[in-house]
Image (cartoon, rainbow, N blue to C red; front, side):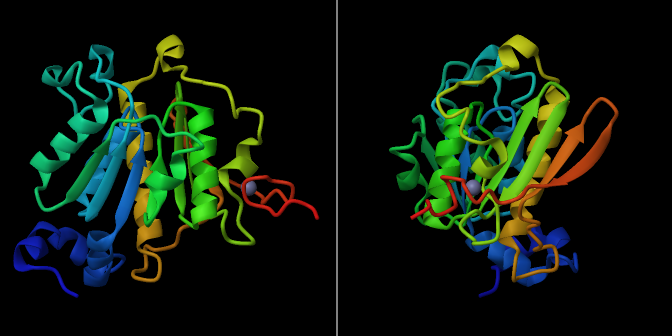
Amino acid sequence: MSLPPDRLNRFARHIVLPEVGGAGQVALSKAHVVLVGCGGIGSPALQYLAAAGIGRLTLIDSDVVEESNLQRQTIFTPADIGKDKAGAAAEWTRRFDSSLDVRAVAERIGPDSAARFIEGADLVLDGCDNFATRLAVSDACVAAGVPLTSAALGRFQGQIANFAGHLPDQPCYRCFVGDAFDAEDCDTCAADGVLGAMAGTVGCFAAMSAIRVLLRGQAALGDPQWGRLQLFDGLAPGLRTLTIAKDPQCRGCSSPPA
Ligand SMILES: [Zn+2]
């Protein structure tokens, strides 16, 4: 499979990169990414996933656009206030590139629905705002064998990692955070504040991590670095990398003892 002439021109700067190339761009055009959360992390991630020509995008968010979102969720404008975020994000995507297949899901994802949304995806990028959803998404990804890019933001610290907990030697997101947060909502942006450019940085880093996963086996950039957590300190600024171990007791990705 090759790209049609108009797409070759649009993605010319990717295609000339030896780390991506034509084969890599074709892989991106065939990929289906499920984006969980179209907010502070999800909206900048969406901009660069769409710009990268990810062929199919499912956008999930149950919130509506509020005026206080505009400081960091830069796909939205004052005209979007009051609209559901998933639908407004899908509208943005269609305006940006009408060739992409985009679907909006204005529902809250939970343990009962996560599997349905994730089925058939090549990757899930989770930038949502609470642990209960994150853990439900992670468990569903492990069960379905779908890689997960997880990104989180707190004040001036960002965390980004790729997980493949379905693989026997790789950790999942639950190995990293444990079970304690299952029932707890933890949206701290309203109370703690967040710098808009921090959300943009973390969202773009997450998009780049997702692209690494989607290019594996296709291009040199395709090294997913499973279980390597990138910790971005926006104040210093600086970047540290931690390796997350697989938890043999994890109820997300390890078999329960017989
Ligand atoms: Zn695990």
